Image (cartoon, rainbow, N blue to C red; front, side):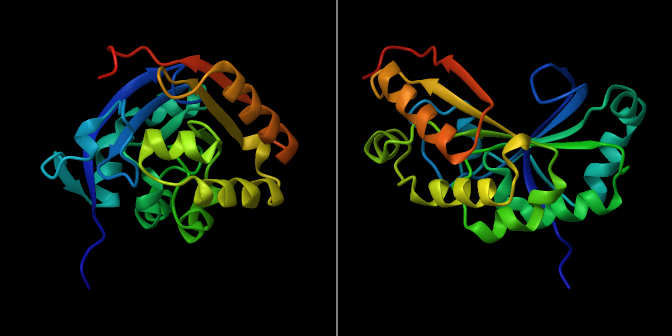
Length: 208
């Protein structure tokens, strides 16, 4: 049987205050279902963007050096990318061998098949969900894909009483949405049961 591996674009240690509680290590996967116009990590979409391929054991061997920091501060591993839920089997396998005192954070667009979310949802202590905008026309124009899968997954998470583990990112995206759009997204999400929001503005070069 072929050993489970995942393509990695970077591992960033000793992060504080950006990826959840305490000291975290950000593990960024290659690959994403979206093609966002202002992508923060375009390397994750390039055919040659992956720096290397690791097994869960390989990754653990690299990150366990910070076990003391993780345990002392309530930190752990933040999986991002790219889209980490595309690697749900890898994440599940990693949690089987890591120190169970570590916390797992996930930075996700949530625009993946539900089975990939179900696989690890209960293992994740904190989700950062970047919803872009809940208006499907705005979302499609910005990402190149419909948000219907995202919406279904949000409803599933709310029904599973996972809202307390979720921080929703609501960006103001120049040339794509306005504050009124963001307000509508937040109102809809509040009605769904979510209550933790991170509102911020994208700072981008002039749009061509």
